[in-house]
Length: 139
Length: 362
Image (cartoon, rainbow over all chains, first blue to last red; front, side, top):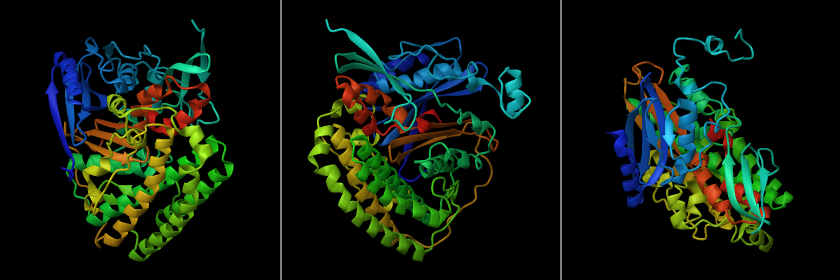
């Protein structure tokens, strides 16, 4: 543990997400960020982070691509950037985003690029598999 | 009803060093709504963590941004150290904060120059950047690099600075301070500058909190979320740390916060140079991050709080690495600051938020 830095990680259900955001808003907490992590094909973790400026609190929600996640940007406007990003890069359905770019937030060559497995292959073979032109290789 | 017009602003604009686009909805000359758009230079660096091991990736993170280069390598190193429970030598903690505060000096002097250029003071712009050159010279003398330093690594720092060199840095900062004294009056007292900045793009304290704003943008609205207050690393050894806060929440207040933080950074560096302990600067990490281990860290970069997250998978490659930069957090605040302003004030409002799109798009 880093000196003078406190953090918590809590697992919550998808149904608990919006009530949690409402509670954090009422407490005057600050929204820090939202990130997604792909653990397997049907298990993506959304990590929501809030802080009271002392402790950094993380809440992990496990979802699949079939789930619809309620947006928290109507409560914390700053979240709209991350909700659009999570939709564009991971394909997560997020409903009710305060400023919704409907899949056009990032100009990316591939659909759901952050869900592609690249661990055991080089970028040229990945690009070839997905039909993307890459300079400097035989894609 | 007044006819509404939509004016596109950016991604290429003289006041924007990097590409961000705004759709400005106007009624006459008044902006009633601003819709931001980024995504022009998205690089997918977070995905690259799957191809570079956790020690190699530190050199990728410092290439995220040319201004916050050292800060990114520091934040990434700290989150991996937190993940793997690595103890960093005390001297390295001091050196890290010294380089990091030098980066803040370099960033704020760069911004003050850009702001001067934005309101038409070409000579002031050049003077700010002349002072900044001395900071870049310190980087070059201590690391060999002026932009990408490659000085920080997981477990400590790759270079030491001798105590004689540190004394020299302290003397150089005395010269920087004297040169900077001659410039601050133009920012803080000049009536032309005030005419351009006072009362423009106002965000009050409650709105700053609701919009989760960070950095000098938030502190200018009296919302303190300066992570240095937590006392992480060598910040915890400072005799005292008082964040710079202003109450007015306008463009002028943001300039004042940054102008004062230059003095604050000089004082922090000089205090740490006086206190730095002797000893090693690097503790080589052993093993790999454990599967499903997760950790985060928050760090105060020149533009505001940066958040780093790492998750291990039992190999030398991380399962996930996340960098949330201050600008991505401040985009909501930027749209709020623009609502209700005059079209002619848009460049100054955008500039005083100090957006870094390269950081944001990673």
